[in-house]
Length: 630
Image (cartoon, rainbow, N blue to C red; front, side, top):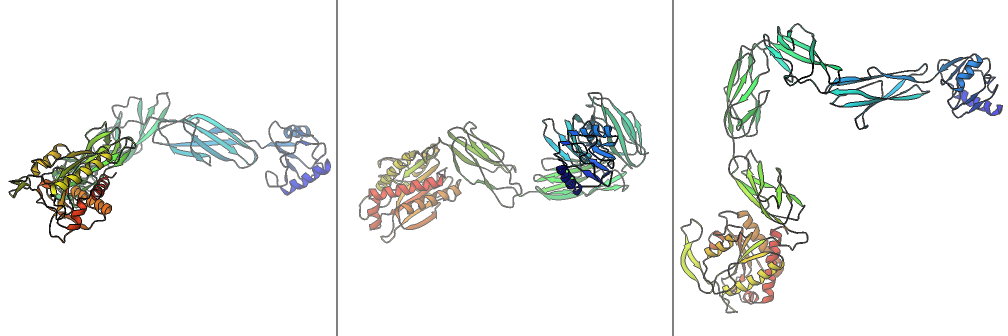
């Protein structure tokens, strides 16, 4: 056994370190029992006995060992007393807070200071600030922790260590952040001779003025008066609801009163531009804290520092007023380029309940300063829209979102929101108007080609004639349109036809009116072309007058693209035409398609082939699906 202890002793000597004694032997942790004379030949004068030792003979160490380091109440303390040796405890004890019930104003800096006792070693600390839910909010590795208090109660957990021992202690409710004083102003800037009440009348807790640290003030209760230029800190004591009190320091600046102030007589800004009004004070060290007002806050607003923000075109008077009563004014002119057009970037939005989509828009001209807009849903049971244009669908149906410019220019646009059930057909909820062009008996009476136009044209013609089929255009138009109607209905669309027979008498204006009154989402005018026998191909047309120009162009493009893909026909392009009566009188997105040339032998035969008519109709359906984003 002594050999084992001698080996431990040799190992311990290698771990010797300087403490209160230069030749201190650190016995390793893990030893449980030390027998009589186990370390009688030690060359050291001091020994550290670890906490693991529970049995220690009083004569375990020789006469050379005069000091035993160990833990209070342990076997080492008892052995030292019995052997008449000096016992030095290594315990950490008496963890304290300088103020274990600290009260500070919310928003102020709280300083927590910890201390502990230890006869040996250098103390180190870890302080944790705990929230009301026990979560650690902040940690300090020193004996001081500082933080900005909020209106809350904090616990503090302190750990202290000296290299031999580590202890911790929890201080419940160690710091309270009290409701801050309700002051009359955030900061006080007064003139010489001017008085200011420090407290807001809503402050009902007991408050007393303790002191102020400068000769620039006099005090009367909780009011101060400027007596000379300077800055003072006023100390106020507030008694908290639980009887404890805290002190708040309020800075007060005192200035010479302004005898004169001047600002530029005029200034110019554009909408959303901001600039500070330059003010000159006499004397130069007069109170720079002025009261600023705008005579027309719809045109411009001004902040406490005299910075003006232009909001809309017009004029406003910006006035600066000193505490002394002196004032000066500036005439502000705000120049604005107002929007002349607002265009919703999507005419239709298709959603299912629970889905959302952000609407966007374009303002013209690009130089317009105010590009902000508001959004309004016509039926919030179907879909709502927030201030940023995010549409959220709630139930199946349709609603219109109106986008209105906030520039007071009166420009608006709309987007139709169609909410369908999950798994709905591609065109479910959409209303398509189909107008098979021409009729058996033409109407030769003249009508305006557009609302308000002086240009006149016959109400309806019979159209082209087939060079091979010997059929009239109105017949082929109806055949292709009926095929289109069937396919659209199969895709879930509601279809409004202007005619389903050749024996009608409808002007092109009446046809457009049928579709307008049905509130169709798109109006398709179905025609065949005529010309020389060498001409062939498929084309589409849209108008550039009235509303929905961009939408009509997109409709004409997608319809033509769909037909070209389904048939492989020749592309004769998308064209503008402002003389087609059926387009001009349409108050919805409208396009006219020319399916091919009846005056071309090859195309006339194709146009009368049911299989080719089906391909054309399929292409139109695909074009409509792309147009509606389906």
